[in-house]
Length: 118
Image (cartoon, rainbow, N blue to C red; front, side, top):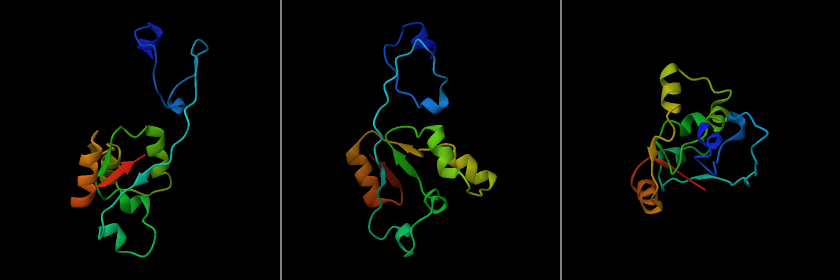
């Protein structure tokens, strides 16, 4: 925000939940996009016939091209009882930042990591 105010940036993409809207800003809302977690065949999450829970998914490294906004992370963890160690791990999402779709595909195929794709 300070860079926008000083006109050092022309554009910023932000999560509005974390920002006080200021009258001098022109805001254009972006469309929401569905995201998907991708796993390989025989991934440990697929061992159960039940739908994996957020708690079970957070036991594996999350791979994403961008940082997951704090508000989204709070929604993921809402109502989840976690130990302090689990919370500190979850606060550092994604575990692996990766800009390459090919590398994300390889991580999904060869590891227990959970690539997040949009």
